[in-house]
Image (cartoon, rainbow, N blue to C red):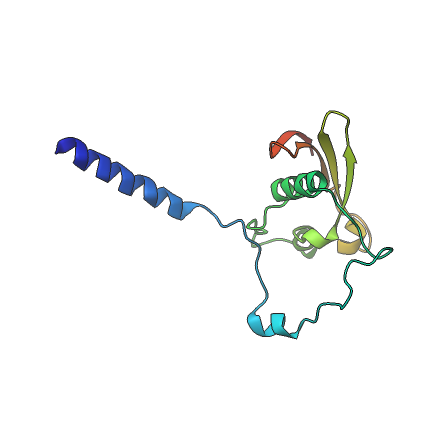
Length: 141
């Protein structure tokens, strides 16, 4: 009986830990906004489309999620430039597939978007990602 009680108590305690995991899903637009969007009749036409392999897409996602996690918030006293640097859309990404299966991912801030005088500090990072294993092998910031 004592063993069963300990087992049940352990399972309850462990299941509570799952409540503290953050969601990895990005935010979605409200239904009324989503209903207004009209998909093009012929999406992904040649000349307008960028095709990413699964390895490249995975490597970029892993690097960007590490560099600027979706749940990371700027400090309350952040300057306008600092607030801007928390936006993912101001970053450019370069990728290079290496022969050993590693993908190099470079993330570079377009600082002129955040600061017209371009005095913002260098913001970016370089990642070596093994996409097949879902692993960041090394990084430089």
